[in-house]
Length: 138
View 1 (cartoon, rainbow, N blue to C red):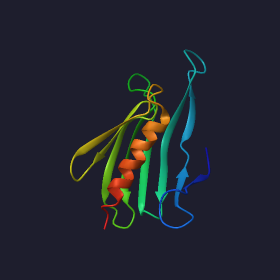
View 2: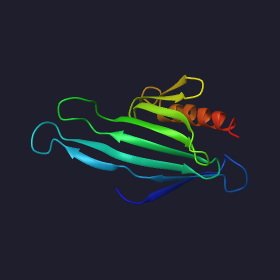
View 3: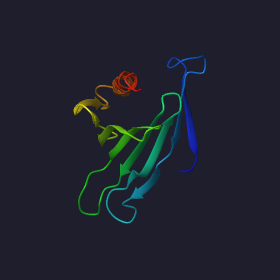
């Protein structure tokens, strides 16, 4: 999928325009067209940039290998845009449990985005962790 999306969080950040997140979309693949169960899968990289916070995220949507691997796996890094320093590492499943690890202090925060807990709870944990950590930037 091509193009970019802009997400504005009006209740975050300074000023009336809030925080702006510029996102690129990963590619989508259809697996199992000829045989087996057909499944859609996200692949390649997605970049998320917040100019107000000075943060950039490179998120890799990993595709399942022919014989091994899992569906819906992600990995990535959140960096300080100005210094290029890696602040956090992301891993897990975008449809299940994601882990964000603070590289400096080696602490992990688990975000469960399962249907039982609801998407909103996982999003709240992720954004509150990200905002809490971004307040410690120089």
